[in-house]
Image (tube, rainbow, N blue to C red; front, side, top):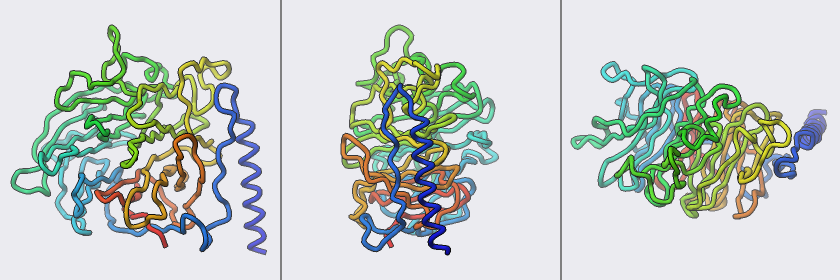
Length: 403
């Protein structure tokens, strides 16, 4: 009876998902029903093969991100929400943090809810210049701070003092964004949420004078001079805007082979979305708060979608409710995964992968069960070799591998 019950449950899940998706379709955007993941489980002949998670470290306090500098094959840096950057070196978690912004001497971080140390990016030439940037919410008022630091000249496993690059005020405590990453041109991309509150009450994401609800593109050597290629500013408009109309782009990444930008934007009431931006294009309006996913939000019917770029993938809150963006696999250890983009859902603890062929998303697979995962996906990460990792908010780091 048990196998038959599971089969009936799968069919019921499929039918319910189709019904909910069709009922939720809006005339404002795409009429395509979101892709259904393979529901047949993990078979020996599946392509890609079955996957697993291999734990590489544990004992972290609210880890939010993982990254390695380019060319640094022995170290992985793990960001903790409370203000520490921890260092895994040659497979061992070092006792002393690389950086601690929450220490008694600094005490810079507001660690609560969606606030804390949220982003970390190393200069593309970090091995020679030692420069890196962090994104955190300031303890005194919750404002977003993007600051530059450097590694110690005496110990490469320790950071030196830093200085603030810029500050952005936050009207509410949530939707702070926080992601940092360098694009192919060497400019720093900064993910900013809409500032919080339900439904973007201040309409920050569509306000081209505001830094909120945007991806900013920063020339770190000449700031505040705008980076070449940014959205042309007129009058008081913000000259650092690359993309806008975003609610909370918690995690985004660039395909290290193609340069395409994958932006996972956390939704409001009904839809989570993934936007895929061809390399070096930018200057896109992703619709929030006019739209949520492919659907009108404000107004709920008949919104003006002129000039809006719609997501390449969405899922509704029957499936999950807080998308966590990941990475396209470009490592060497598992060639069967080459080109697959991995992402998850923080609240539901789900993990998926897709293929993007340059025009459409295809081959959506859910990997949650085969990986044996049942926690909160706060982030994914990529090491210097292009191998992928999963960051469990409850304190563990896993590497994604084939069985």
